[in-house]
Amino acid sequence: MVPVMTIHKAVIPAAGLGTRFLPATKSTPKEMLPVVDKPAIQYVVEEAVKAGLDDVLLITGRSKRTLADHFDAVPELEAALEAKGDLERLAKVRESTDLGHVHFVRQGQPKGLGHAVLQAKHHVGQEPFAVLLGDDLIDERDELLSTMLALQERTGGSVIALLEVPPAQISMYGCAAVEELDGAADPDQVRITALVEKPPADEAPSNLAIIGRYVLHPAVFEVLENTAPGRGGEIQLTDALATLAGLPASEGGGVYGVVFRGRRYDTGDRLDYLKAVVQIAVDRPDLGPDFRAWLGDFAGTLGKPLSD
Image: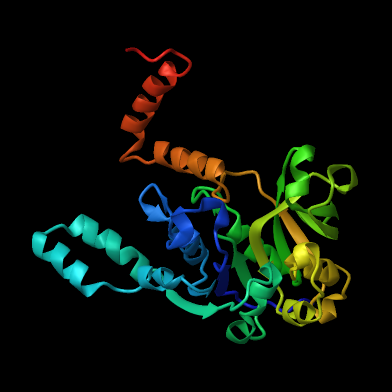
């Protein structure tokens, strides 16, 4: 019988250089780029806390001090807002401070996602934990992380989030081969039989892409320590998970998947980032009605010649 352990720790790798957003990320971490009026990283931390993960570790790097500043109190700003009676903005400022217990550790050298996760070993210890990537924002109205946590507690092993993508796009992602999971009432909960990092489309075992949510057994740390650099010369988390998929449950093995069919916003490149901002803004009750009306008017001008 798989022992049940309550999961309460989340790890968020945030050490990337953000080169696709230069020059904006020359001095501003990509995780701090605003998605409407909150930095992307805050959405991710909020998702973790909402799922019951109140102990959050951010894996950062050089020039990422503003990440820690964002989750810290700012007494001078708070006092100024309070003195003005601007309680609405004061509450927004305090939201990030009051989310949960947020900790930080530096990766040091950018050696890949697997190496970043490995930096959490001493903080996590021998507990299952979640990993959330900041490039993927999951709509708060859709369940994903809580479903993954429940599946891990039921099965043991590790759980990854999967998304169906057009076959031509699978080479941009890690890819999973799957089979039915015995005893699963939900057909979107599957067993992983193989994993490959960014395969050519004609060699991919499926069109199920790995997206940025994981719930991992602590056995992943020992596997990562013995995982050689893979694609791109980096230590790939996908390679470590492929090893775990072949290990017995008694050694922390077994990898499972949840196929996500909800709303996901990709902030990983400039075009998708712009789409994410628009998608989230039109659903905001405070901004959506006026923004939708303006978008409709603006869309009507597209393709028309500019007037003199």
